[in-house]
Image 1 (tube, helix red, strand yellow):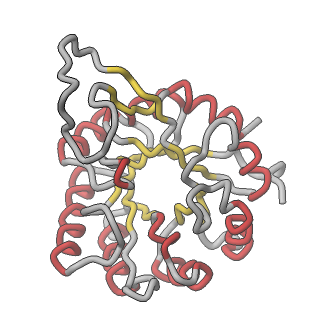
Image 2: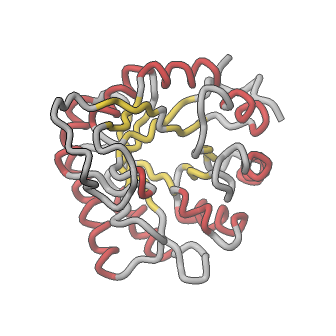
Length: 254
């Protein structure tokens, strides 16, 4: 399969802050998925991030609805939190939400996902089903369930750690979707591999964080303490690079 006859490939940037979201916009991204805590797979951003992102962005703003790290089997209380976060997104004027809830057997939790989609759609918000899809027991059944629920696209790495590893499954998902829903690859997509992925799978949307590490401007540094359980540099921050966004888009559409 090739992409020669398709429309321009669009890039959604997974932005871990308002700063990253603005960089994504400056680089030419068509949409932002705003989240926090990317080291934990992403969680719902703060209300402050949400409001300021909406203020500064003219491109589409989607928001990750995920109350914690870990699996996608949620308690009743966590489901209420997700509903409350969606109401915040609606009130803030966001363009869409990004969701995913599974049952214990690895199938899609259709009743609860349907309720979240209903909440969003009645106010005109779009819905992406995120990489909980990659944790499903049967991806092809999950594909049909997500289409039935009413989601607009699926963010997936083809059930593998990276989209390049899952490229063959992604191609088959595109074929089985047959235009009923958008398949958007994500995970490990860079300016160096995106062209091959696009041409092989035939996708028209891609997802990347396009991040770089920025050193801290702190002059005093206490090197004898860690502020979290994750080993890493306490004096650097990962942010989206507008130049990397441009490079990915150029390679994807080259």
